[in-house]
Image: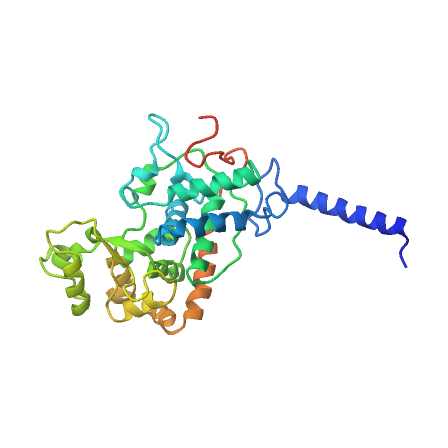
Length: 340
């Protein structure tokens, strides 16, 4: 039986080990590897803090979960997952990615990121990066919408620059399959990643301007896209008339628009993909034997889709993450570089 003295020494030894471990995990002057437990010692409630902010935001904005995962996607595809998309423009210094065509007027959710950052700064100032907030918000958004959970790898720093030109070349809703494959390959993501990550279009909204070409003048033919289901085309034509407002919002998935499920792939199977880039995964001539079988597999099994999506989100989060403290920082305000 332990004496009170030996028990005290054991407790002190355990505390010392925990302290040393926390110091090791907390980073320092060298680049660190991304880890699920990165904030366990320095900000252990980080996940729940972000989750509370998102739940509150969702009460007044049903679109917010889909919008936040899109921010993470658009951030990671441009000079890596470094929070560069969140930076506001500074004349002569930063040409904000927010103004690039794929983001201008459509990227949204920035005030919610600000709210999450403010809550984290109040709890553990100077600890959690804005880039990691986007990664956390994406997983939480999917989970709260009925989708899979995954272990979010953390430890990114925030960049000090933006890349307007890179943001202008993001994967586009107008891209054909060849271009989509090229853009994903450029960031070391494969065709499974392409098809799985496209599945994020199982929730959220999209503007009419992104589908009017398919409805009325596909590839300059003055005719609709022949791959588009006739009944779905008639429905969309009512929602998005030829001379109507291009800003009218439509459900990406008309069946379960706010639920994260496999219905996106079910829609592609019957030519009801909203965006050209979506239907290309199933209907492009070269899709057979390449991406179409992956679409088929996910349409058959939601479990398969969920597992692949979770892994692909981890893969995307590993696109050139900024971890070198000589090049990055923990922004106090996600919209601007520290000291600016």
